[in-house]
Image 1 (cartoon, rainbow, N blue to C red):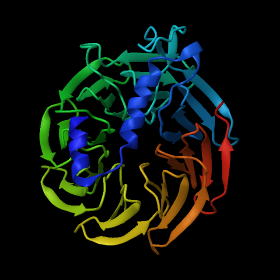
Image 2: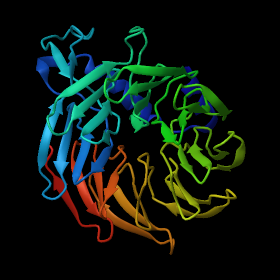
Image 3: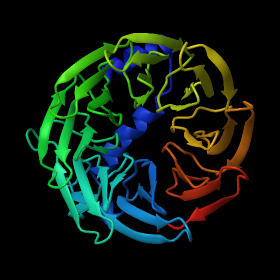
Image 4: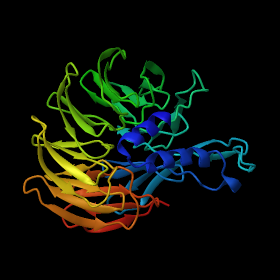
Length: 380
């Protein structure tokens, strides 16, 4: 926390995300009467007509996009901590807090838990497998906040113990690990034979996907939570130093950087030579991908921490206040699509012209990217 406090003294950003993550860890340690006090804010993934996400009561769930009904759910449980140090007791197991966005690979759904475990669940049989990424040293905190990514028959994940892990997609056995200098809250990106990952040590790393050896690193002046995007040989990401960066993907050299008024927290999107970067100052910046010049800025009127999604030529972004906007990449017009009436921190997903959003009250909405028509899905 000392590093984050020093950042605040310079730029005075918001701290609700850090506070909520800490609160999730405390609550998960003591749940009187076995109630489902797990929280988190899992993002959503859509694959073959099904929405997958981690619910705030500790389940991995699948919802049919056609009729909006729950297809299946698998509860993730962990042993209770014997009262959690607060004088409460009772349950022998409690739900796992889930912050990560799941990823699918064929029939398997992979998702990370705040308890330091990676889970693989069969969508057809619901049989599951798990591995504790702290098994070499359980004294490490090891919380998994960012989601996993699958490539080259491996699952890659970053942990708050500062390690990047590569696991077998089948056995979940560890293939390699790489140590950064601080916590990892982001989701790695894999392009070709390279894994790109950001860290609280203010650096982004490019690693060999096969053996985990380092190719290059680049240091900023702030911790990095943003997951990187690689497009056209360039790596794009934002930092808590208020800069948005473009690096050469081959050697990590700086192409350009763009300064805003607050943190760049979420993963950007790119379209037709333009990068769309969401900032906690309540703006979305459209930046020329080649030069770093600001083309236009969109004022959302409220901060947004969820990553935007691209639907055809529309960038869809959701504010923390639950307002959904459509940003037209051609006309550069901003349209207020829908109001969800709930807080949103989790990143949405899009499929077939629809956007799927998980709110902070554990509700799942579908919003039409053109009309703004919305419907609530059942995830109970």
